Amino acid sequence: MSILTVGTMAFDSIETPFGKVDHVIGGACTYISWAASYWYDHINLVSIIGDDFPESEIEALVSRGVKTDGLVRVQGKKSFYWSGRYHNDMNGRDTLITDLNVLEDFSPILPKSFQSSKFIMLGNLTPSIQASILDQLSDPPKLVILDTMNFWMDVAMDELMKLLPRVDVLTVNDEEARQLSGERSLVKAAAVIHKMGPKYLVIKKGEHGALLFYENQIFFAPGLPVADVLDPTGAGDSFAGGMVGYLARTNDISFNNMKTAIIYGSVMASFCVEDFSLSKLKNLNQDEIYKRINQFENLSTFDVKELTVLNS
Amino acid sequence: MSILTVGTMAFDSIETPFGKVDHVIGGACTYISWAASYWYDHINLVSIIGDDFPESEIEALVSRGVKTDGLVRVQGKKSFYWSGRYHNDMNGRDTLITDLNVLEDFSPILPKSFQSSKFIMLGNLTPSIQASILDQLSDPPKLVILDTMNFWMDVAMDELMKLLPRVDVLTVNDEEARQLSGERSLVKAAAVIHKMGPKYLVIKKGEHGALLFYENQIFFAPGLPVADVLDPTGAGDSFAGGMVGYLARTNDISFNNMKTAIIYGSVMASFCVEDFSLSKLKNLNQDEIYKRINQFENLSTFDVKELTVLNS
Image 1 (tube, chains in turn orange, purple):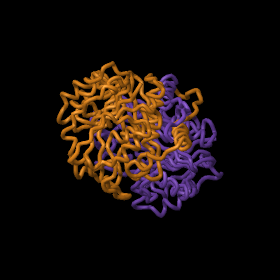
Image 2 (cartoon, each protein chain N blue to C red):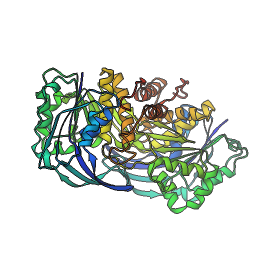
Image 3 (cartoon, chains in turn purple, cyan):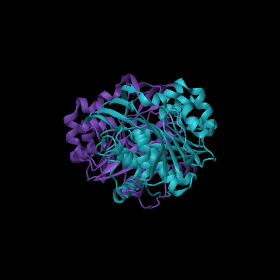
Image 4 (cartoon, rainbow over the protein chains, first blue to last red):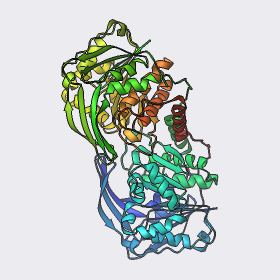
């Protein structure tokens, strides 16, 4: 049973109030794969890179159990490049440069060995590419997770709407959930989005945590307050990677286990933001991961005393 | 053992995307007292009103165990009046009118029977008035909770800084914590603010919940996603009222009990926002309160499986 992860592998140039890095390794598929690899070691990667992407980065992933048969390297072209600057509050950012480069030609072919993957993690891409991946699966997957963004709602809403009935878990941020549903209230937005297809809706709120909606139930994974958020880039993808890695490892997609999965996702995201690029995410160990999981438990756990309510 | 609650009693005119109300009952002390009265029935109220404030509102509080010996009614003058309009996202608002009216002359005298109050809840007022309340206590209080805002940091920072060493629990929002501490990171802000005096720092984040900082520990009370937020006015004061009411009832100011207290505060706030003014907060019963506490438990509770971390 394998995870299939599809998305960009890229170079990023990032400016935050705490520093600036130029042409560092980034991309949704990179973050997802690294975060997932702490929990699961059958990961099928589908992406596209140019001849500028370091082979050592691929080798590092292979050594962690990532299969790269679905990775296309295009000679004579450059990898996808994104440059952005974060605002002072770190919650907003401006895109300075988007060079699609190899991404212009991305029309992924699933290798035969990938076609029976069970946990499908579709990173943010055009809905038509995301759909084409599902079309190429030979067996029904166990879980399809889709990440998307407001841009696709603006320019490819029809394709996105056609794709949603095939999706089990949709991950968006709060404004995207509102845009997609036309509802201001997240509770109402979730009800509308469930009807579009996804039985699970994950609303990512950055430093404010993440909400999980399922039927009429809600779970909330807090954002761990960390002393220094150096760079939020990749946090959402690290979250998705931790979540899908944990779900594949436990092979349990119940609501109860999904709650734990988004905590594990939040744990990976909390590491991601503590340094630029994948610097922190590449060097974690058992102790610090479980110490952090324990911090999330302490953050959320309280006792209830059933007292008689007065004056009621 | 009594709660002492000090703050405004007012008329509000409020406009939100969901409606508009004119000259409804408001004020920090009103919300605090109502929310606290579900948990505790020895509440000493200190406030000031004009001859326009309905006697029936006072009687309703008295019937809930609120002592009004510290309430001054000024004949020939009007009560404090605030008018505001909420933005579409409900997180921001513009003040349209602030008529201080009787508040211009507010120089509260603590009745003798109030001077030995143990749980002191100082609603948002000028720091000098808040300090004068503490000066009039005959016995050392068990807990002093102070609510304040950015305005007093702008115009009365010296007085506020002199007051903070006398405060056990400070409640502010995230931007105010940043302004007070000069730190962007809330973790660092908390460390700075602890040194100013308050051993507990509560950071209210509106729909995103509330953080409690104590020594090197953090607890997070989520914001319950409710289907319809009609009016956020008074949510922070309802939160404070639920918190202090629960703390007085249990007479336990340990970190562990403080966690539960801010959940009970969040519960009262979640009711407050579901209708304009005090409409919802005035009509709660045991069942719906504990049903909601149970929703907060479901929102936060997850299982952890200790798995061997791979590739680490």
